[in-house]
Amino acid sequence: MTAPDSLKVATAQYPLDPVATLKDWQDKVSRWVSEGAGSGAKLLVFPEYAALEQAAALGKEVALDLKATLKGVAELAGERVAFHADLARMHDVHILVGSGPVVRDDGRYFNAAQLVTPKGQVGEQTKVIMTPFEREWGIEGGGQLRLFETELGRIGIAICYDSEFPVQVRTLAAAGAELLLVPSCTEFASGYHRVRTGARARALENQIACVTSPTVGEATWSPAIDYNSGAAGVFVPSEQGVSDDGVLAEGTLNERGWVSANIDFAALRALRFGGEMRNYLDWDEQSGTNGISAMAEVIDLTG
Image (cartoon, rainbow, N blue to C red; front, side, top):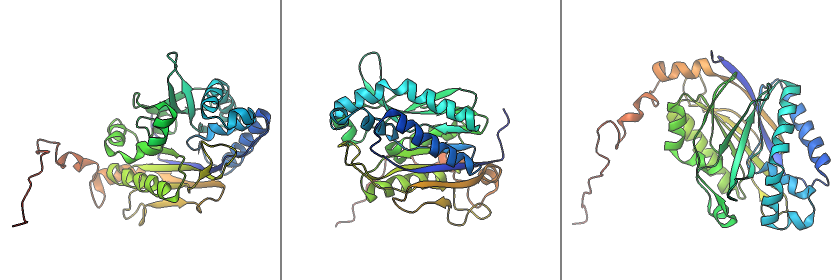
């Protein structure tokens, strides 16, 4: 399949509201998708753990209990993804569904995001490396890294903390990813800046585009996602002819709404062979690859 030379993407700064019913949740998501698609974007990105908003509709006993939240929201996963697939078809857009818990046959919980297409295809990526609080929750990490071949191009997903690990994203870029989606859910501004820094670094290293989407604002009805801080962004390498500062678009911290940008994939491809630098091609010249020793020599300068 021939990859497009450009793509308009809209990424959400998404608030987690105490929806009273699942119908209220559907109505909210429908409005958001309609607004995002109305910008002309062909890809809409929702954040990590946006699915936990459904716990509010399941009642206080569920919303206030972490285990009950994971169980209740995981049981809705199939319906949730199908609902987004219907919206994708209705608006002719691809959608990264807000991630949430999924449960396997052996009872283990994972944090997974699904990419749905207008034709009804669904691809799922689980989060690989767990944060300390997720380990406390009992959510497990791991799973296969997946590259999604779509009509919009080759897309990889690195959920929040995963974006802070260069080798994972390099694996996706080496497989052909030109766009990395980074849904996130961070409590403090420091967490938001870590994810933002990771996304910008991954864009630089691999000469690709990275799109971040955070949860924002207070959701004190839930102990799991009570406080959220972040801003959405669309990042590329800072190179002449592409972007001087590497920021195609960025939202205001903790302000709900969509952030959109046009990504020039043709220009990004040209960078790998004709840009100011050759980060993608020169990856293998790092220590530990291409036959160079990974052992650092320790030089004692204390005496």
